[in-house]
Length: 78
Length: 251
Image (cartoon, rainbow over all chains, first blue to last red; front, side, top):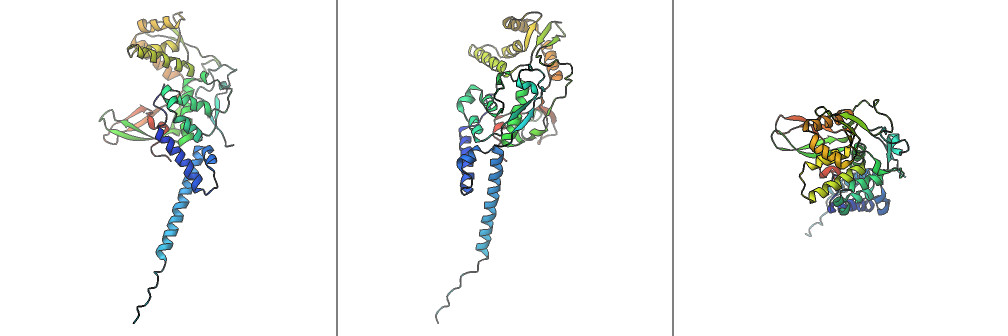
């Protein structure tokens, strides 16, 4: 009998966290209940997809900030 | 509803009675969800040693299957299938090199594991009883392939023995007394156990084990180990540790 199989209590937190994150970052497209009932393979796939999208959006936003022209300094009064 | 996965049993259903749904040689598994991961975190089930059994029962689509009748050799295949369904086929296991002693991280693709090729034509469908003559003592034995229920009973017996401080080799004797159903005409388990202990010498035990390994189906769980620290390489049994159901690098 293999008694060492099984997950530690902290793993349970990770499972719930991944369910929550998928629901949270899907902006309402997937509920917590739906994420909980998704096959783990699907959950991993959607989480990856969301992670990539968020990364890309962040990079886009970041590059937008960098290419913005610096604000014009008011000319000093002479 | 998500698609299910059909798993072919290594036994091909051959050793089950015709009325048993497992005699089809296939089982259908549902795709595991967080609910099934929750089962794996149950302290209660882990401490009882039945966490995997509870998980597998939940995953079986056909609830008419009497899980207790599942053969251990088929259960191993379902465990591996469940692991692949839960976390993918990549499995990283820590293994110590038998030559230099260094700890290696082995990456194993579980889909590479294959069913042993054995001649199945010699078996009679529906019969889980076989004969063998021990080469040294020339004793004639009849034996069976163990089921989940047998494994549970063995585990209980061993636990009880440990409580009573019985020597470790009694584990082997107990297991053999469950596998062997007839020892030179003796049918009582207690008496068979006694015969195994007193009459079955180590060469007979080794020959019997080798007969089981060579002639009966099951997952070929030998994987190639190549040490990263020395030149050593060898075929080892698939190392199954705590990470088997919780991969460190989850895909």
